[in-house]
Image (cartoon, rainbow, N blue to C red):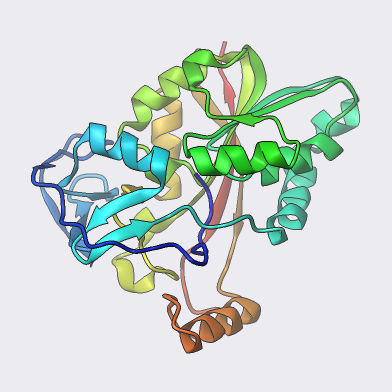
Length: 296
């Protein structure tokens, strides 16, 4: 699922919003009261009046969300939002740094690790893990978007379009890298994760802290609605995990609004891309990495 930069040469076709959208309560606390937070592509993101989680409401129906995640296209007010994107080699070094820091003990122990990357995209994390984990480790990825899974396999990476129910668990670690925001029911999704995670195993998550922001004006990118359905803060993520039997063991934050980020966005805008132009080190947004262990 992961990726941000749009693929070149993709055709944007005229397409109307789905005829029917579902009005929902807050996915975390079930509160129905909310306030406007942001808007894009004909969709509204609202901030829950109870817990502060941000979510798209109303949103496409579940069948439409599932199909859009498979083909990488979402119906919008202005046409079709293409989210296939393309492989990003810059991620390899960043993932390597984060994994060495957050899984130092597991790597140093030298024992084989079984690891499933859910929403593996083009297989960047899988590629890093293959060179980082101890010998004898088993690394697999599953990715709902057929184009991405096929591209990863062409590069020799074990990424398939299998579902969680088809995964060959149990695994020591299950990772969700920029997956949370695409999931309409994260509690149910975590239930599926626990079905393939061994007792005492680890869930590793990368997401943003969008739910901690007062409004979308502080968000350092376009929102990609309705590909992104939910924006959580660190407290929201902790609540989701803990009520599903996972104990947060470590949290690491990283700012993305660096001078290099600002320069890249400016270049993208000059060449017609969709990117915010802001001064570096001015956004409260952070990329968040969470390591949580299954209790019992």
